[in-house]
Length: 590
Picture 1 (cartoon, rainbow, N blue to C red):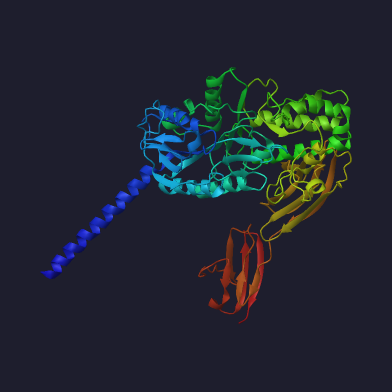
Picture 2: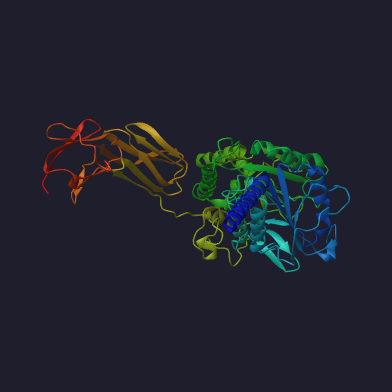
């Protein structure tokens, strides 16, 4: 009787466990929505009074359509500027909110209580963003993640505006510096917490669409929505793009980017000077933009443009070059950001100038082409020659400000050994150009090696060229098998058949091509190797293996035909046949 009771109890407990497990799996499934939108509102400054207006817009567009989209907000306010309001009253500390979809969108407050109260946190500390991303992933895991950063932006500032990047927190007296690597660290580790690249990162911030800033973001986010100019105090308009995410998973980056830019355009129109663009940089098949390799190529073209502006034109001291600098579209109606210039327009002026040389013009055209492709849509009002991507280009030399911590190790863009004692960054020639360098001493080189693995049947071609070169081409038996604008790297070519193969590696400058390596390889079966009475067949091209005795009888009782253990067979003469054509004799004597 007792045994039956225990059995019944065990059966009940088993059913209860399975029920709990099923509920946990169901909850996990429900939480995995197509999209989670992270909104990081650093309002601990004079923008605090704008917090509730933007959250009202988000609530209004979101409505109660919560099945496809989770909206998570990390917000910090400042009491001196009114803080922000939620269902519990006025706040000025840091809190996490998960919007329930019940907000009116019109009452000037967050219509939810905080999911997590963090107390006062330094929003300029990368760890605060990293912790927020970690909380989102653990509680609201999604198929895709978007991140909006809300604050003041500084782009890539100069001496009287030394902090490069964005995110200022007045209470803690701190700023998330791009020069020190904090901006990159925050975004990179936030990406690590959610476990994948962000579908987009949007900066509801001034002057962030600059090559120096995007260099920190292009390999973390598949799309970047940013402004070349000031963003008005009211910030972005959160409308159709929120509605679209709430209605269904995004169909493409281009469509979502269009909605974001169009919301902004619809709200502001030509009533004020403003810009917004979306830059698509990813390796997805559906992309309507550029690949990450093409973004690196854009960097290489800026590097070479600066190099030949110095070599061919004599640098910015040349009258025709300085004329183009002075004429390039400034991205501010005042003087605060006067040294932020539109990169496309600068290149346009170089190409249109009758005295500028052909090499500089070639790089300028390449840059314009890639910018056009990278940002399928941009909006500008008050900046008629803006094209969506800027760069730091001061009117006068020697006013570039190096923060003490700005080195190639903290921010791998333009640190220059010639001017701030750092090792050179990725685009140090641009820094040397804007500083006024008139001579260029970088040695021209092009190196390549070709190695063949006879067992794997893979040719490894390594190449390393100076930035004078703009492209690499690899040929096998006269046919092009690989091309790239990236002039330092490696390509692996797998050979699928036997025979002789002749390789050439060709490096291109703007005006010529040079064969920098040649090699011939012969693809044949690697010899089987016998060791400790085991015959090893390692060749990757061998797909058919047969083992026969001297009478022609096939022997099949081996556990692994690529490692034939001859201890299982009598002494004698045997034949190993590979792919039905390649025969090897083995005289077994143990």
